Amino acid sequence: MVGAAPWLTVEELTRVAFERSAVVMLNEARAGARYCPRTRRVGVAMVRAAHALGVRRLAVESITDDELPRAAKDLGWSVHPYEIVADWDRMTREEAGSTEFGQRRELAQAQNLAAVADGGHRVLVWCGNGHGGKDRTDDWSPMGWHFPRVSGVATFSIDQTLTVDWPDRGEARPGLARELSGVLAPFGGTAAILREDMTEDPGAFYDAYVVSTDNAFT
Image (spheres, one colour):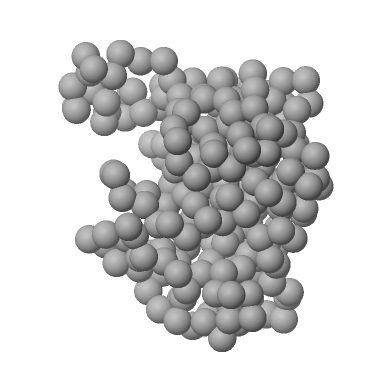
């Protein structure tokens, strides 16, 4: 996965990310109502590190009372929802899960985020799973791909799902967390690496990856 390139703490990654872009996207790993608590703890640590850098805006899909919005509000940040406006109660499961609605949702989220970042504001964006990805596939264009095109701002996007142990699916990359356990131990089990420092290029979806030996879902 890497050669002799240095690993980064979450705080070091936060500094690098905001040096490269005013808009930093960070995901959590979630499956329905379940999620990987480690990814949220990293999010809180990044909020605190970003605060020391002068960042004061957090964007989330919807305002909830979970760890990240609380941490941001406690520090005096403004918290901005960017979810699409939709009549969720009237939508069928099939409509909500359709590719057509999904694509409309990704674009609308990017447009809402562009309004939050307008004027050069530095923003930490919290998203789920692959929404912050910067590349597209044949049939999917995530929010992270749309955002630079509607805002003119190139983002720095971070993935936390590379080593998670998904419910009913198992490890995203089988054996990777075990393989890296010795490297991660001095970092308390969780560290980050820039895509440019990886010997195995995982593709253009993210600029950096947070990997860990703490990958269980709650």
